[in-house]
Image 1 (cartoon, rainbow, N blue to C red):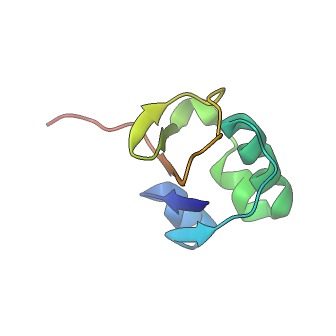
Image 2: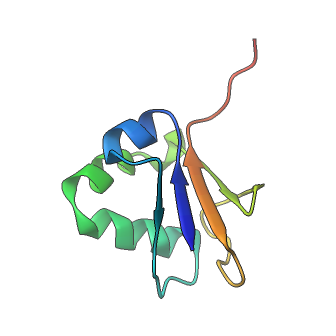
Image 3: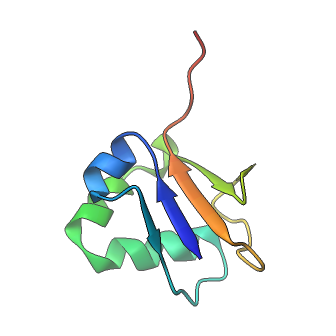
Amino acid sequence: MDVLYFAWVRERIGVPKERVETKAATVAELVAELTAREERYAAAFADLSALRVALDQELADFEASLKGVREVAFFPPMTGG
């Protein structure tokens, strides 16, 4: 699946997008796999309350299933203005 990173998440990880092969069943499991990769991922996912996730461009939560998902996007909460 494609994993996209936006704003400071992209800055901490160092890439805007990557293709990930995963056995994770949920977003939380995917985050755990990514966090175990390298320190830069651990830094980006250190505070999940500061992150939002979208699955195939639909907002979701971290317990959401990844079954059939083609794209996961991580980004900070959006602010109005």
